[in-house]
Amino acid sequence: MTVYSGHVGPCAWSVVQGALDDATIEGFLSYLRGVADDAAPGQLVLDMCHDLPMPTPVQRRRIIEVLNGSKKLDLVAGHALVVNSTIGRGLLTAINWVVTPRFEEKLFARPDQAFEWLAERNPAFDADALLAAVRAAHPGFDQLRW
Image 1: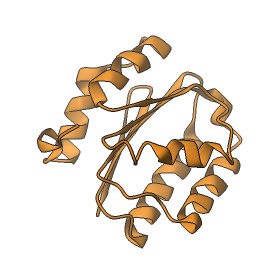
Image 2 (image 1 turned 180 degrees about the horizontal axis):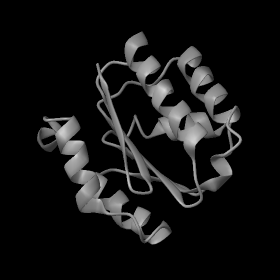
Image 3 (image 1 turned 180 degrees about the vertical axis):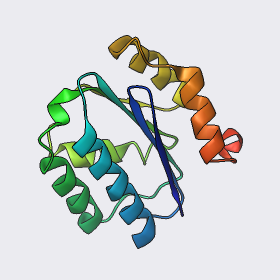
Image 4 (image 1 turned 90 degrees about the vertical axis):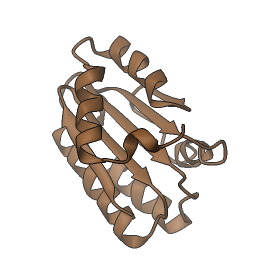
């Protein structure tokens, strides 16, 4: 599966869908490194996960290593994680057992819920522009059921 990602205004975003194979994990880790290395004051992060299985212990460790290796994550004003399944929402809990976020973080069931929360953290957040960028990168995004 492909990882779709981009950056709109103060918000880095990703959509990850389907199997967590090696290529998907590598794509997500590459995106995370970019977010971690390029974070600026007021940075927002929106990660949308659709029908993902739980990551393996090795995959979780690799995500944690990237997050722990960043010197700039203190600049993040908020991380919204959208997960369409109840079981999938356990991902955040599992990772946060090992890594305590250095920024505000909140879990959502639908992207529209996350947009409002992100706008409260940085008024420069433009939900319409972000949604247009997501749709351009991921043509099937509107067909996903959240």
